[in-house]
Image (cartoon, rainbow, N blue to C red; front, side):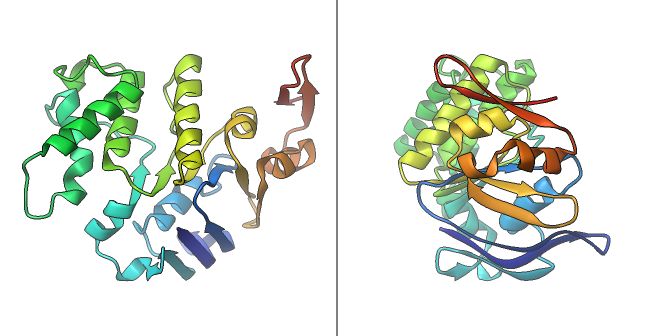
Length: 253
């Protein structure tokens, strides 16, 4: 679905990530973790084709990313930005429907199918009764769920999400991550950044760790998210705890 071969991510002449190579397959849910400033957001933007790779190449399916038009990319790949605030007056439903724009070649009219997709996405994000509300009246967490609903309305095969649970309370964090896990189970490819290794362990199939020296580690979530790897990643001791129900927690200290 998305192939990355020998890619470097650089800023101001400094390589943050070197020789990144992987293949995102249908069903993969990859959690991207690393300390602040390591390049997680820049890596997502590079994978989405928003900025050029310093080296290497990225392909979407069988097509080189740099040869595709933005509309073609948006029909197949969706990106949730870290801060995705709307700056103009619009209702919740109008905002969700923006996700259909890449699919509306030569038309700005929303079809019944577009409307059905938007309403389904809003319902999935717990915003089914919010359609007529102005975005400006929403809380930060509600806006985040609306941004996710717009991405679901876009209906891409590949989803790249920068801190999808930002601003969300614990209940909505779990609901959103469960939705992303189900999208993977349905054959989508998902890459998301998170700060909590425990959430990554519960909902991701794989973990991609970005270290401050530009190296990286990609493995199954269970194999990658060990106390030793996390201690190296965050420069903080980690310990693993398992409760009576068999749930594992990875905690600093």
